[in-house]
Amino acid sequence: MPDLQQSTTASGIPCCPPVTTAALSEPDAEAMAAMFKALSDPVRLRLFSRVASHPAGEACVCDIQDVGVSQPTVSHHLKKLREAGLLTSERRATWVYYRVAPEALSAMAHLLSSTRPV
Image 1 (spheres, rainbow, N blue to C red):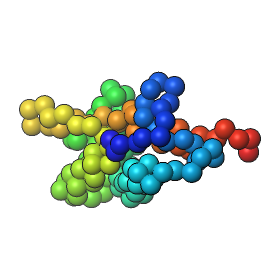
Image 2: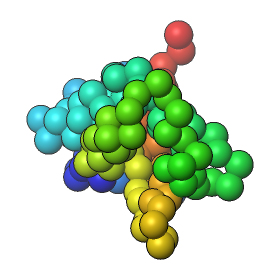
Image 3: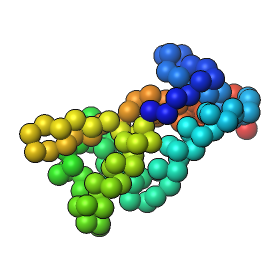
């Protein structure tokens, strides 16, 4: 996961302050932008959603690859999600299993949380 330096969530996960309470530092903005940029592609967002919603908490690439693009393209998108710190992966025999990086979800949620009334 990209290195976020400002603060931590209640569970101790590194994160930056909510955007409603303080301006982001340059390193925090770059780290968070990389995550959001990775999710801005519809195919990546669908793959991320399939992994996140998989009943086992992890998904084999064979279970999530049917998103309307070729297998090499799926691999490329999964690589981008891993590089952005959104997914972790583990090879087991011939398959790769993916999990959502919980610290990434917490960091994005914390950044977007509002402490001000809307």
